[in-house]
Image (tube, rainbow, N blue to C red; front, side, top):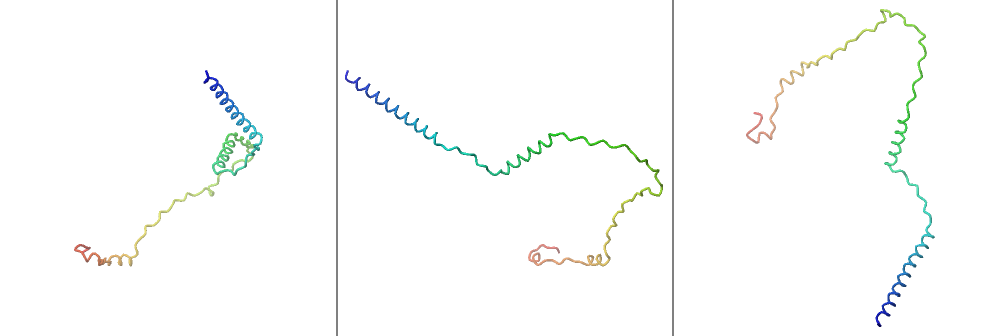
Length: 129
C-alpha cells in the first residue's frame, strides 16, 4: 500500500507543525508576561457622586453613635417670691386695621368717568354703544 506511507508522513508533518505553533505561542506569552511592567493605580479625583457617597457614609456613622445623656441638674437653691399684683403682665388685644375709605375727590372723579369707545370698535357694527 503505497498511500499509507504518504498518509503517515503527512499526519506526522501536520502534528509537528501544530506542536511548533503551540510552543511558539507559549514562548511568546511567557516572554510577554515576564516583561509586562507593574502598573500602579492612578489616583483619580473624586467624582461628585463619590463625594456624596463618602459624605453619606460619614453621616450614617455619626448617626449610628449614641448621643451621650445630658448631665443632671444641680439642686434648686433659690425660692420663689410671691407674685406682686403690679407686675402682672397685661394682655394686649390686637387692633383690627381700619377699613380704607375712599377719598371724596376720588369718588367724584370715578363717578364722572365715561369710557370712550376705541376706533377699532367703531369700524364694525358692534361696540360699547
